[in-house]
Length: 266
Length: 319
Image 1 (cartoon, helix red, strand yellow):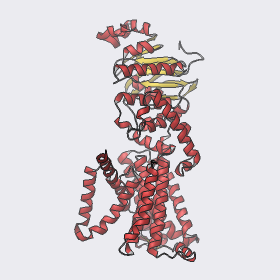
Image 2 (cartoon, helix red, strand yellow):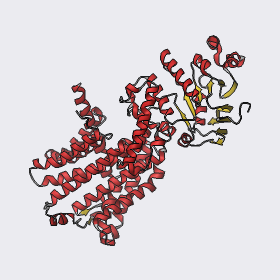
Image 3 (cartoon, helix red, strand yellow):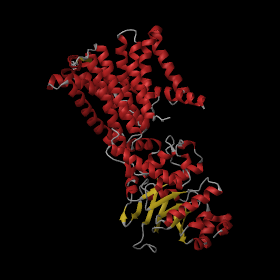
Image 4 (spheres, helix red, strand yellow):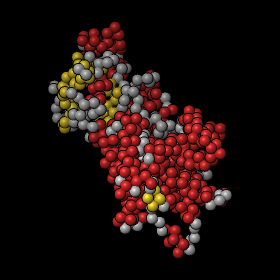
């Protein structure tokens, strides 16, 4: 691994998975440092979300290793990864539809607000205090993503772009060391995309590592420190935005006829 | 104006109903019907936690009611335990059994979970039917007197048998509802509702999904168990029917009919389905048909259940 050193937060080494003999992701390696924004790009079906699902413990990889802060966390359950400082959002929204926006954000504080179940059943002061602290934190996060005024609304009634931001707020509530964002700007208009763009940069500036899957090339080129390109489940290139966008293999495999897009802000 | 939380509102409505309805009872018989509603309401409140909050289905919860009921019949006779303690013992056994059974079973989803819990319920019911030496089989067994009414009488509170069980079960229902409502907006309750909404998202925010499901299963088993105990104690008799398949189905139907996501709604459902057969006796042989028809219509037109749908309509008109 070329980029791996002591500062590495997340390292992915030779990761792969096969579904019924079909190799969806094969031998992918890269590393992410604190405060860095690393993007994974590639055409549809390249295996980006599958890769995310392996890193975040939802799928069990059939080969390779994932290390978080130097410790092997390959195949560790998502709820245990959450304790180790990993959180994520989803390409196809995974919102708790029948809960309010505020409650959705509060669930992000689960690890800090959970306590003995008996205290919750009897509504003991400790339980109420923990819930209140989580709620205060959640309100601040909602303000940060511009959803504070929608706090009491049922989440299912929000627009797609708002729900994307709600997922980010919920993921931030875990106070993660690394945040995995799966197409955070998908379905968002230009203004919303720019807001998310700023938010991601801000979060990264606070020292959180960001692993990003995104189709909006302008955004990827603008905010990424490092880009990993996948095609047919394999890594075909990696490097900084300028290098990647000039790479002939990338242009051929990923950008194809729309090659000019990559140079727009490259 | 002070804003009343949904929790306070629900508890106020319940307390008022328990306290005020007796003034409209034409005869003492209705205390008995009321107590039956409260007992069913308690079991159904447990279903709200399991199904309404956590989104897990059980078609075997009557099994726990059976354990609670038979604990009150057997423990006082065989071990000389006071019936009141037998209620606690039954609840503890139910909780322990729910823990053991729930661990493997709750890995299953949807109708697989339904069938597995169904199997559990049938198993309990078969044991109660077949262990004649202990349970005296399908004919049922007497349950000792709780004795609390006599104590109250000594303290100067003289209640008829019907009145006593009405208020006693009413009290249990209010406490049961209070606990379920506490849970709803607590960290654990929020985690349960979250895993109901999206298991994968719940896992990524750190919720230990199997553990939370198991907790909900155990809690709801305790509700069913206490409900079975109260039924046995007030009837002073119990048969294996309490653990039967029909009783399990009844619990789920009551909850879903009234509104499984809301404590008050589910209790309302318990009320309707306990009362309806009494009212429908005028239809004689068509009783079951009318009951079935009501359920089908509610599920088609009022999916969230009776009470939440009605409230939503009222609110919609108000705006």
